[in-house]
Image 1: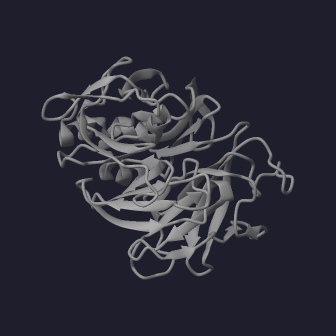
Image 2: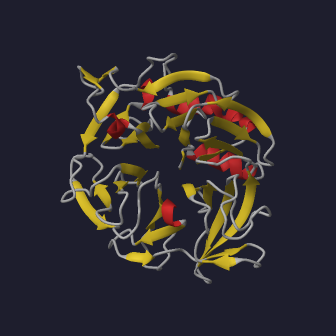
Length: 372
């Protein structure tokens, strides 16, 4: 999922030759930072590391899947543990405006698994807040409170929306990927282990009014099926919704304004023109990210057809990081293999070079004067 960089950073980043760092995660148990040439800067052990985002200050936040129920804050500089910003079951957090909320400890704790995270300024104070998708709810934590240290350094809860698990309302199954549009509109997949009752739900910026629902049944949206607000593939002037269909090894696209299914499986071609197809056979895509210039980043659980270790239809251990550019002329996603991992990959974030962050640190403080 989810890059967050202030516009001033982006401008300087471009002028410095478009260098970048990547943060990669694996539910095999690690988070690592790589340079733009994929030299490892650091790696740290994190159980069930899944979705990853980097905030405006260059700090790393990792959603832990499985039975962890939390989001960890890591130092961008060296990967060291800073604090736990999203609570586990039974923990209590402060609520904006007064009072507290305690994470339930009922029998259905699987519904509290953290699936995806993103940043957006929910309360309009100029600081992006942390959006969290659990299996049955959304939570938003105040971005100004995410700098605490230790296991109980939870952010202040700004809002929470519980989403009932009913086939008539949201589709039987769990909430998974989320995406926040520039106007605050929230998109979220709700998947199922069968091919029915899957939905892509849409809420307004207050997170109180459900403004739309797109039927995505017919696909097994069960894993962490992340979303991006991506390229306009039908040319109607509206950005479209690109959703990972992990269990079917493909990306599907719905029209962002009408909800119409535009492509059941994006066609792709390799950058050198030697390979093409309609899906990443047996690779199981795990995360999708869009950059400021429209470039798509995609992580996979297994080796892709672009990987020299690929052996046909069998699953080959070792995930890949792919880069894609939508080619409207060909109506294809042009793909390049960026990195071959020895283990599965589950999340990616793309960030400026450390030198850029350092050079802008004073400016960022003057612009926002945050986290005092």
